Structures are given as structure tokens and as C-alpha cells.
Image 1 (cartoon, rainbow over the protein chains, first blue to last red):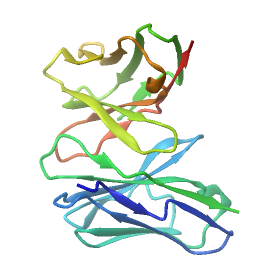
Image 2 (image 1 turned 90 degrees about the horizontal axis):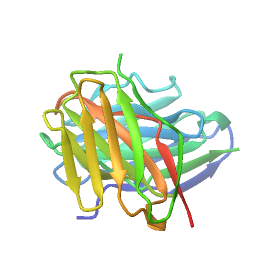
Image 3 (image 1 turned 120 degrees about the vertical axis):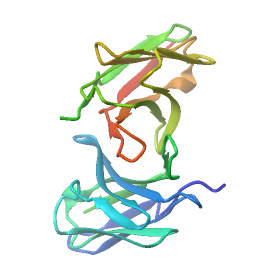
Image 4 (image 1 turned 30 degrees about the horizontal axis):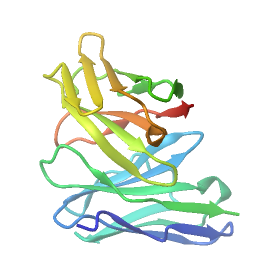
Length: 113
Length: 111
């Protein structure tokens, strides 16, 4: 199994630009999670989906952030417009229904200048 | 509310045992986890324990759970340089709920 796939692995952009992060969960997993990791705030859960439906988006910082899961094998996290304080590593994770744990992707390191 | 707390740093000598501690607040937690994050990588599940267990051992790793005190620990025997990483404690109430992570403990190994 290829594991959770995220792209790009690194993204450098300028303030005000739109940023789209992509995630492909492990095949057969029906829950998907987006996290943000920074030195100051640690690991934060932004949003998670069950069967492509957003269940809890209380961690999404503000309206500039949006996430979609159009099908079971793909999700995006979009930031528009991006700001320097959005600089962080963004992780995607997935979990099979009824499983005890979730599996993380390698992360996307975002730098907003 | 939900909260998981860990110390931020731990330094041990190579070959010694490392003990990373964690406290959690949700007494209803069913699953308790330890994840490892190496530099530049995602979180990797190390081990987990159900709340009805007191201890779990897996090769060099020993997890101890004290439900009364809501205290979880991870012991790494014969610590090696490859064990240098950030270790996250986490809890989950049920199979349907989200995982709550601690802030992570950075383990460094000195010769």
C-alpha cells in the first residue's frame, strides 16, 4: 500500500496568493483528517470527513480556509488569500471505519512570504 | 474538556531507558496512543493501549496506563540515536471520535 499521499511536499508562495494542498487517503479508508503543525501551536486538527462528509470543521482558523472531499480518494485544503501566519506543515491522515488508529501522510511544508 | 499534556523535552544518554510521561483529562477515553515523528516526516503510530489494560509491551517499548491518575507513560529500553524524535501522546473516546494529541515531547540522545 502506498500510504497517504500528499502533494506538493513543499510550497512557497507570496502573501495573497491562493494555495491548494492535496491528499489521497489510503484506499478503503473512509475517514480523512487535515492537521496543521507549527512550533507555537503544536498539532491542530483543522477538519475531518467521514464518508466524504465534513463532520467537524471547528478547527478551521477562518473563512480563508476551506476543505473539500469530492470523492473517497481525494481531498483538498485551500487557503485564499494566504498570509505569512499560515506558514506551517499541513498533514493529512486517513482511517478505515472501525479501525483503532489513523495513518499520516508525509505532510506539506507551506511557506508564505 | 479534552486535554492531553506532556513535557516538551527529554534528554537521555545512549543505552539508558527513556520514560516519556503524559496526562489526559477525559476519563472516558477508550484508546490511548503513542506516535513518533522523525524530522521532516509525518506521525507514525508506535503503539496503543485500550483503557481496560494496564500495560502493553512491544520489544523495547513498554506502555503503562494508570487510569485512576489518568497517566500514560512510554518507556523505551536501551535508547538508541535512532530514537531521537518527537513523541506524541494521544487519546480517543470511541471508534467514531477524533484523536486528541498532546504537544509532543522532543527526545534527544546524548553519547
